[in-house]
Image (cartoon, rainbow, N blue to C red; front, side):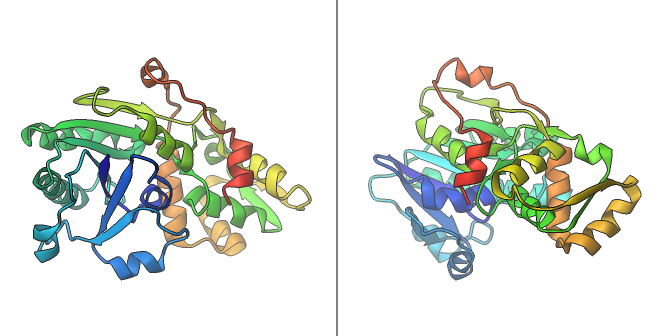
Length: 290
């Protein structure tokens, strides 16, 4: 099956173009700036890359064709958050054009993937998909982890410091991180032509953990000899200490906190009733996907 894929500048999208193409699942990834995208890749692509601008369209958009047509179109949200009106409107424009591109290649099946934090705003996305009269599934996912993920970078920076300052509220945030490679394997194995037609579903990782537990798991798995002294501080002091102790980039800190603080544990029962699937243990994800 030929698969059209957009949203490659997201973490999951970058992993997808290098890990999702498999036997009978040929991925055709589209990006606005092909040279810039290639310069940021952390793995060699296994899918086909094409320059297509979903915002301004243009010649590449009009001429884009896949021989034999597209069987499935997968769109990962393009914007940092759907909670801001400018971002939401931008998302609606690019998604509408993506649907047009899929249809021009004979595809009427779209899977839209976004984050749990976007849940309050997916009704606007769903309204567009219904208006387009296309068969859709909206997938809300927990935080994807693995090589190059925002959580992976954050944990490495914390453990490589001499001191760990934390506030209890943030340390106790619970979430179900999911391996990016597991999520791609799940996408590959799901029969999208039969299941979850015109529905919203959720997928999360196998284990509910806190930020503190995730930190300890990283330390135990990758840096068992690291000597890091931890101490609790008031919440208001954390921003200054993070910048001073860990030199974490402001953008990474904002993205990580926004993602994690709006996560919640997910019950995978809905889709597990129709598909057998085993998750990779978190320790193995941390150890192998580096």
